[in-house]
Image (cartoon, rainbow, N blue to C red; front, side, top):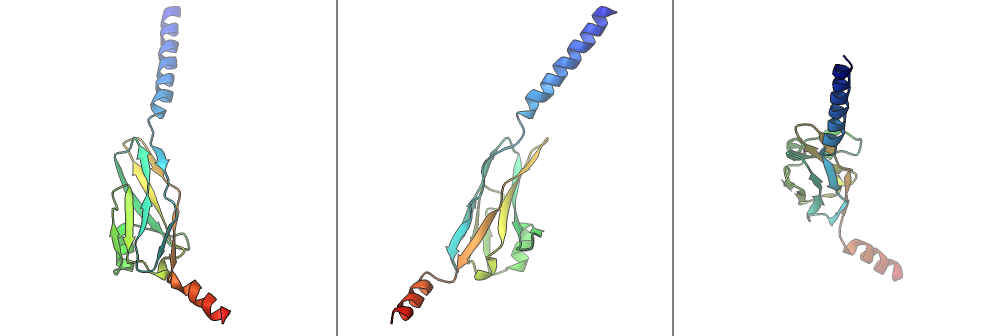
Length: 140
């Protein structure tokens, strides 16, 4: 009886250690997107990386915090070009001022885990020359 109880306890202990070891193989995000800064009409790029994932996709977030898939976002802004929705680099071309306050994040998936990155925000300005034009007018 003692041997049976000892064997069962050893098995339970070994299985519990196995659970801890397998937790080390959950998804590990190694690169979060940083804010995308560009001039209206240009392209904003976001990068993200992780380990131990099988699939991924990007999600857009409006200024109120509501989340949208890439296809929903494309329907809302048909003039934008969105590429890389299932890759580690997302590019959004032909940007406009309307994107200020929007954000993106990346979702990574595996058979046992899901992980999301931090948000990267859009910072789109009207043009590079606008501040200089204001300054020049002010100088006169």
